[in-house]
Amino acid sequence: MKILAIDSSGMTASVAVADGQKILAEFTTNDKKTHSQTLLPMLDDLVRMTGLDLADIDAIAVAAGPGSFTGLRIGSATAKGLGLALDRPLIAVPTVEALAANLYDVPGLIVPMMDARRSQVYTGIFRFTDHALVTVREQWPCDAAELCSILDSYGEPVTVLGDGVPVCREILKECLHVSWSEAPAHLNRQRAAAVAITAARYYEEGRTVSAEAHVPEYLRLSQAERERAERQKMAAAKKEEQA
Image (tube, rainbow, N blue to C red; front, side):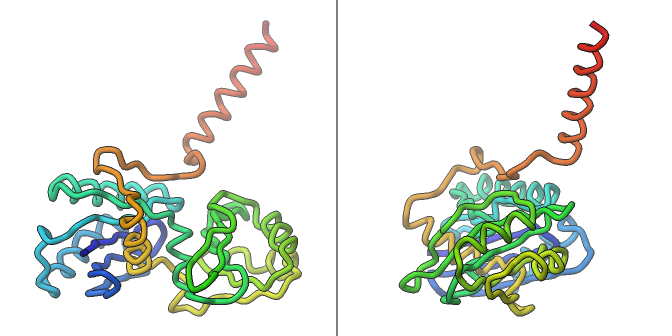
């Protein structure tokens, strides 16, 4: 079973192809270029260097969110386009679950933290049990200080990873009282290989969607949508006062 995987949910852009439990190739970049500049060229290079025939792909996996609104849209649009062109199903993998999969068999709680701005993170809580990744709490948006309080309540060692860690490091130092550590640089960002391996399990469980049906999971409204809602709320309140 061959799975082509895409992750453009954050600053990192990553593509990979897996054949069963074997990663045939993975290309990852983490610089300031936009995903619209990097993703398709990386896919082209992956196909060229592996000699992969896209007709042999069984499914397209994509990090479905949360994450950067623009990055998620680019990744989802690319996956949907490939799925439609190849007539293949899509496998939507939660971004933070794929992140947690980087830390295979690490003891204690694994807590991805993706920067959601204003001292907030997209996060989830995971652990490995009998060599399998188990979801303790599914992904959700959370204030970093509140997350520390939640993690303290478990009373277990914690390993954090993701681009939200450096942003919230001082909050972690101040508010997180259980033993905690940061994942090393080569494991602490999104990787399409982790998306592909997680997607293989989803595929076996029948957790696929059609290209037409796939939508990203943003977890919260975009800034523009939040600002519009706030303006509408203020306008409604002003109208009520005038009445």
